[in-house]
Image (cartoon, rainbow, N blue to C red; front, top):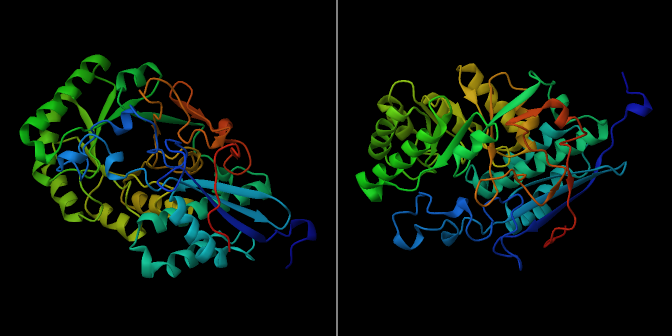
Length: 408
């Protein structure tokens, strides 16, 4: 059986990679796909605990140790009928090199619907230098997202309908930022705060973060969710003490206490946790195998970043792993690229919105300024209608200082 001529799908004729911000750029603090690439005096860079916090010279600022050196990667794909799709992630110039000089061979010439084939070929062809994650998987994720955007635009359908359609009419969000009290006023269901202290600060550090939690609990009342994001900065002993100290203040979960490969640390922490408190992680995990190990360790909520875990194609597989164990998958905030997926998942009852305004006191699109038409929650809620545009429903802001450093 052959398709009618009018139903034949176009092929992909070109793939292009652009960067913005990061260490290689002439202009810094651009935001975009690398949301850590912000200006000075931003909450996202204010004494947040990290694996580098044990060094005094790198305690105050995450930018000081290079969290924003990669910058934004933009991947654009073009079909033989002239339709273009694109996506953004965090990989900058290194990602551009990988796209133009390696991954392009698996993309150009394929039909726009051959996303899974391209995805598998990209993953397997980079195993010898990917290390199972990091900038290579970020880059593959960006290509995958661009392909889904292109496919949706060719078919004039939003990505969520390509994935099987919405299982709910709305997405409810919690906010990540420095001001959960303001997030409550904006209609969010909860607020996740970064921890500012770690094992090098010992019990005094725990006391300071608990004082912040107690203050926020007083401000928001008993029913608003409060969570801690620990950003890979802790030890099992420290995380255990912090969790128990936080329990009287109804901390809903404690997130990403350890680096992604420290599976045994997560397994032990789960045994040590106060009853009713959730353990979550996954933001920096880049492989399906890694998520299976985290699931086996008893993580309650898997939190892949769709721009860092392999794209929508991998995210759907991760959601299936979580569903098979009765676990939730609540992706790390990644704007429209998450929204179109999670509205189709039965095990994602809420989602994350990352507050990228400097003081977390107003709603700013996460990838501002690089996406045109990027939706934000209204009263903490986003509707399916807000996503009802072809592809991911956004366009590339070509007024941004984009550079194409390599061409194949």
